[in-house]
Image (tube, rainbow, N blue to C red; front, top):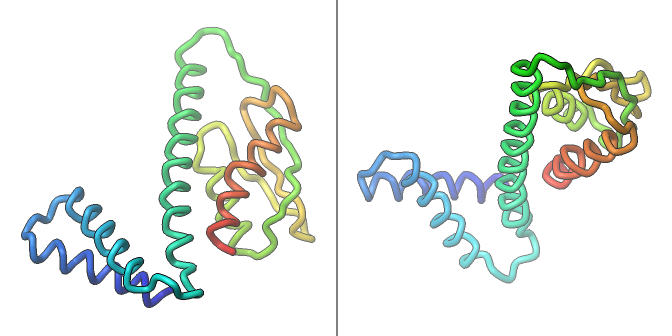
Length: 158
């Protein structure tokens, strides 16, 4: 997988150098062209993990940007209105993530979205404590993290 990623990066830079256009859309297009070329060259091989992960990473980036925008708007609305609509609380979120890197990524992603903050991880690494400004329903909050960030993150990392 690492070799295909590096090959794709090299093809991207080759594309950019040949076209002479150093704008971001050209880099993105070059990456897509390189991905397509590598996909055609390696079709039929069983070790095509790279071609399953790249679309998931791109989807994850868009999902994170959506969640970031949504939470920013929610917190901005809270700041601009005179009446508070917050229902803050701390929730124990059971973890499917087991390694230190998986837990660290998840905790950081949660903390990056406004209105939520990862507080601590249990000593057995089975529970993440999360503070949120908006907890209407504890179970739906947990399901949102588990089916959102954690599920998508584990699809990429595992």
